[in-house]
Length: 301
Image 1: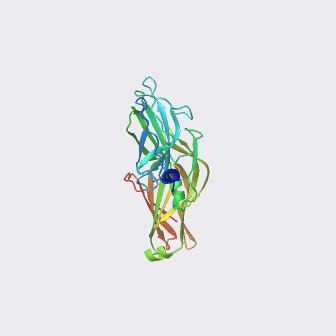
Image 2 (image 1 turned 135 degrees about the vertical axis):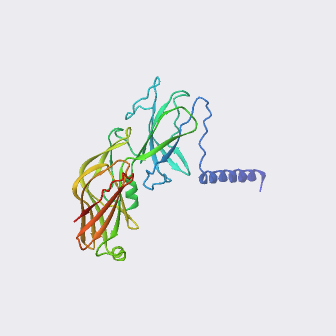
Image 3 (image 1 turned 90 degrees about the horizontal axis):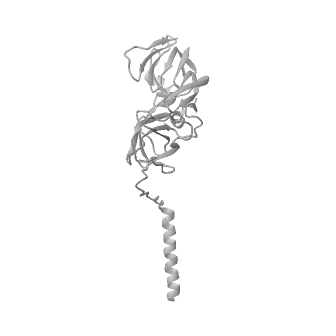
């Protein structure tokens, strides 16, 4: 092989090796070294808010708004024209990465941070449409019904990550079935059982600034997620008029809990339903997430 051909061969080999490496390893983004630009980093935390109740999961995306202070006074969150508008941050490998790096206005200006989950196109920061799933029997649909809002106020410019606690603004119902007269644990576990929560409005509008959700639309029935005999569903906060609040169908026979109930924001309401064949009814004990010491239970025929 001539020296000329050898140098072509070596250069080609090096070029192919470089291309191969580029295709296998991600390109490291450039590091900004401008001392006058401070990049904004975030560290959202979950206050038993995520559908998993523990933490955000890899691939989760949140939206971030940043509203600057002016002359020491907080600004108002608006649909657009904030310092940062609905920047998406994705959770991956233990870090939150924005679609595009964002920066503080300067080294002195404080700001308020607004966070929401799940990320979407926002049409209104004060009345964003959001609907929980009517059928939450699949875990993905149960999780997709969760909505979190967080806020960090009067934050000074820093290169450190901004802690933003995220809180769920929906309500949750947890239903457990217990065998009563005419049932045993074995007969109930072997039966064909279906559970529904009735009279529920699934649509809502969400105010990202205040973290309040308002139920809208027509009422329907919600099918909860069944996890080893424990039924869970995310509910828009609302007051439900007296009626068949919960229907438990066992081998084709309905057992109805007749009750009015108010689903509260950020509360998990537990219903223990005891099924009785002989009385054709259901005995119910309810313990709210924050126990108020009041027995909210009752009987259903």
